[in-house]
Image 1 (cartoon, rainbow, N blue to C red):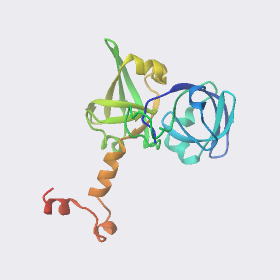
Image 2: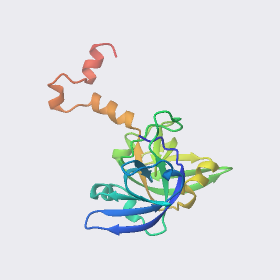
Image 3: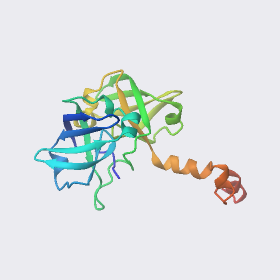
Image 4: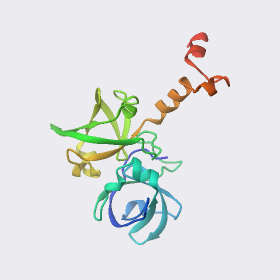
Length: 215
């Protein structure tokens, strides 16, 4: 579990491509503190398992599903990435609940400065937009951000200068693809309210059930 508060920017040092997978070596400092092989690190919002460690770098495998669903396939040697270690049980919950499981990618279609803040507008597919709620949370490349505006096929967030400086948002350009993870709470609620027919026959919670019982 992560919170979407990026700890540092890492640099892709090596990429070894397989037929349907890849192995990344990423140079870092902060996230290597107390990290062991088998621990989880979010790379641009994607939960990856540390498979090897050396001074100043860690290695992680990227599976076919992850490459297909995310923007990691576009990384090259020297690419910068957002890094966050899994949240410790006694840590501060500074962002929102982020699983590190990407729903899809979105396209950054507009970047606009507004005094000290910077607005980022992301175009997304309907399966993403259904979970986008004004003033709700979304993880963009692993960064916990608040949704400020919503249109039919896009949404906008406003980032403070600190967030831009501490993440790869400072390098993003219009036309870039970004990793998106919507708020997991909304997906669980939808699953409970709109169960499959099989679930309905097993006494699942439905809209009719909630209405009948005064909800």
